[in-house]
Image (cartoon, rainbow, N blue to C red; front, side):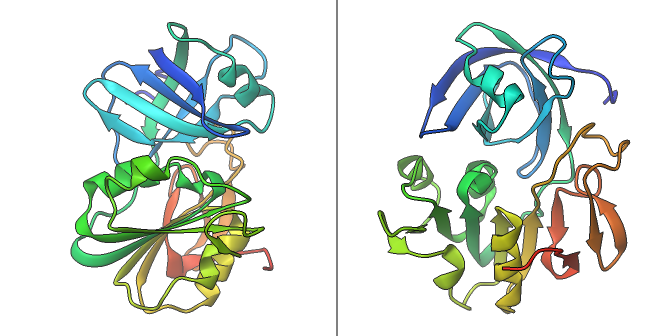
Length: 244
């Protein structure tokens, strides 16, 4: 793939899922593995940088991305209508290693749900989903088609169990795939569960191809780039710089 080879995708739908959460679906022939991402832009010049979005699902000449409106770029994206075109570059990053015939937990916090549907569809395992939200869940009916059990937690107890997903996960899994804010991931790591873990990290990615070093993190292997060596890392290798 040429690193600057953006391609166009035609919007099939771009719908609001929750307060600031949107699901956009594009028509076209795309590739990608669970955990990989695309750089997405739906504007001409400003803001300068595209936005990195994980593949939510990919099948039959269409790809979808779950995203949260957090600034100018995602705000513009959320206002695009069916039939409009966006420019995308990808797939980028390494994606999740796929395991079979093991007991698996998917752990997501907020928009960390974004890579979990495509991952769950690819797993031939018993899969439990631990999904944390601020006050209410979204897309759980859709996820239920691909996992065996769902544990929902909310910060305020408005839905599901009160607290964080890390308060409820049990030490009975072979593999844990996780994506969410760093404090959640740090708390998950501190549990010292016996499972092999893979963390998809969130970071400020500017270029998406490892050139700008804007998403560098500390690992046991030294400084690594989330966009290039990641976004998925062996959980035992990640060194978090946050306290939880």
